[in-house]
Image 1 (tube, rainbow, N blue to C red):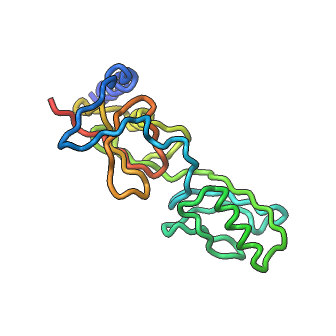
Image 2: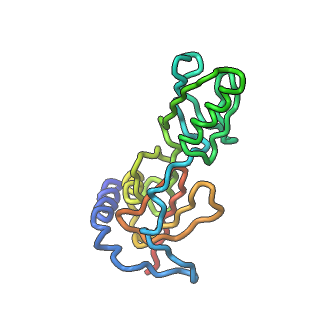
Image 3: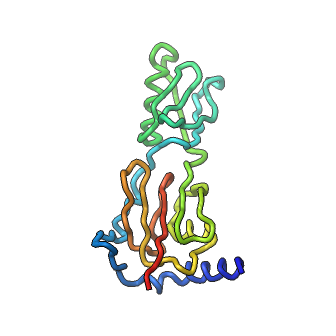
Length: 193
């Protein structure tokens, strides 16, 4: 039975473009934002749970892999904590360079990259709700497929997304291109007959 529900979910995921052609009706008078108004091209901001590789050229003891802690800090050898929360990777690199210049190195050259993004969460009318690893370019439809598809009660016309750092969730029109960002909480609501 579970396999049948999974296959039905995938059929719905694959055929959703035809299912979600019109705007979704709003329940309770809330506004539904078109998916094309989501910020997908904005530069990635670091947050708690991201894993980074920091390389200080010529200084192997200062290089390594580090995790952004719950307070948004990265603990680096020699310099201690460097704030990463809400910064782009380039801004974080500049912050590390500034810390290293404070009496440790005269001309530090630093490279940083994100190894693993913080996870996203999906709940509601999907077969296997939970926490999943984020992959670059992830869409809501990919997230639903990762969670083994929609349940038979799922509303396939809109999705509720709470972005990391935002207070509440917003309703968006569900299309095949609705983007997901690391740390997002996605909720698939129940349809009403």
